Structure formats: structure tokens, C-alpha cells
Image (cartoon, rainbow, N blue to C red; front, side, top):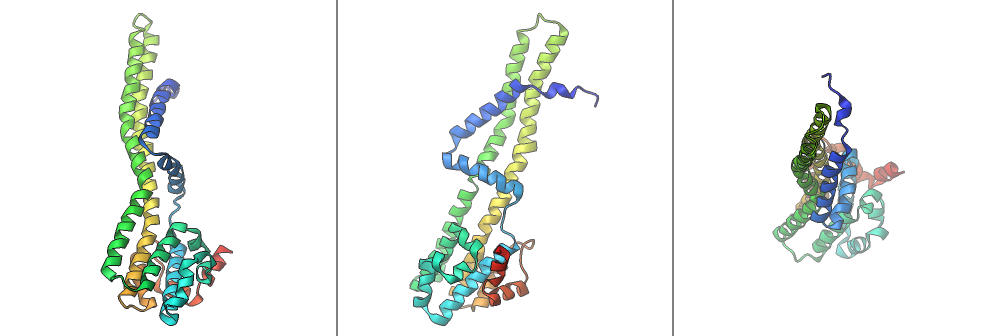
Length: 272
């Protein structure tokens, strides 16, 4: 537009805005959330959510566990869920085994199925509570970033007001000096609003998208195990789980069937 771009560079305005935002963020959030925010931002930028291959691994593992339970009984399957790191069924899917939270989720509910006393609706209610907790924990960085972004315009106004106060102290100076000081103050308002809606908001949404996809894989496990508890065959049970996957990442029926037949060989080739 013919303006002087260099005038936007006002370090002290940025120090007021970002320094205050950082301090508020540290005060408002527990250390675990602060630490997890860095990880969540990287996951959001790189879009590190489960892909079609990851869903195939989970469905293949569930099919193997349910088939073993149906064919060999509870005593045979107990060793797999008590020590998944030593189980050949879990070892066939190394990416699932590397996800400790997901592995624990699968083993806990397979253990309840083995016990056999719990009713399906009770298991479903328990799963829903745990899924809510998992989703809540995973989205803490999103809520923290959103809150910080919402405060950026106000911090921009604070920086602008301080700049105006500085300018008022220079009323006896030349118009050139006074104009530069007022322009610097207005940059604070610009920076606060721009960072809030142009940086923090989109970044928070990227984090939410990635973390929501990570939570979705637990829903696949839930639906598959509930269908199995209601009497479905393993192949039908994992179809219940497949249907909960987003159409963008959902593997086809043939892919799931091939994975179930291969017993994890596809996952091992992928890892290799």
C-alpha cells in the first residue's frame, strides 16, 4: 500500500504482549499442561494423527485377541493381556504396543471380558467415562492455547496504552518524533489482534484436530469390543469399529479382512 513496512518492527511492543502472555500462560496452567503444549503444537503442525495404517493395526490386533478368546478360552488369552510386551499378538503390531495408553485401554477391557461378570451396558458406561477423561486430558493444550489467544487483543491494547503514555510525554517534540511514537503504540493493537486471530486461533484448531483424531482410535476399540461382548463374531465385531473411523482414513473392508488374515504381517512389514 506504499507504507513503511519497517515501522511495524517495534520490539518493546512485542515484549509487552508476548512477555505478558507467556507469564499468564505459566501462571494459569499446571506444568504438565505447559510441557504437553509443546508436544501438542508439534503434533498439530505435522498433523500427527492416526492414519489408515494405524487403524488397520488396531483392528488387526483386536481381531487376533477376540479370535484367540473364542477359540482357546479365557485362560489362554489371559497371558496376552497381563503382559502385552511379551505377547506375540501384541508384538505383531509394534506401533500399537508403542502406544502405552492405547495398549492399557485394550488390555483393561479385555481383562473385564475375560472375567465375564460385567454386563455390556456397564462396560459401555465405564468406557464412555474413560473416553471422556482421555479426550479432556488430550484437549487441555487446546483450551490453554485458546485462552491465551483470547487474551492477546487485550494485551495488545495494554501495549498500545503504554505506547500512548510514552507519546504523551513527548508532546513538546517535533511532529516527526511524536508521529513515530504514536505509530509504535498502534502497532501494539495491531500485533495483539493479528496474533490472536491469525496465529493462536488457527494453531489451537490444528492441535484440536490432531488430538481429536488420537482420541478417536479409542472409540474404534470400544465399538469393536462391545459388539464382541454382544455375541458378534470377531470379523463382524471389528466391522463395528471400522465404521466409526472417519471416511478420510477409513480402510476398506478388504483391507481389514487382509489384515485379519495376515495376523500382523502387514504391520511388521510397514514397521520394517
